[in-house]
Amino acid sequence: MKEELARRIQDLIRSLGGDDWTAREEAEKDLVQLGVLSIPGLRSALRSGDEEVVTRARHALDEIASR
Image (cartoon, rainbow, N blue to C red; front, side, top):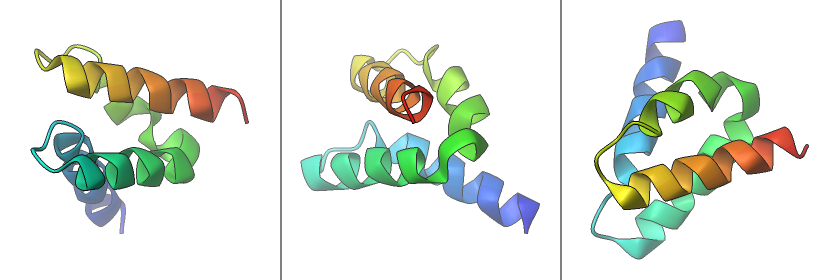
């Protein structure tokens, strides 16, 4: 189960930088819903070279922190 969840989180983080706007929005929403479980992956995403990924990861972390 842990490996499956870790894979899911990594897939969602990769989707933050995808070509499809709707998929990026869904991925960000799903990561926020996962809450603290997604924090380590989102923190790693802050070091991405893709500005879209960084921006969305930062936003997701802010949303999780505000809960």
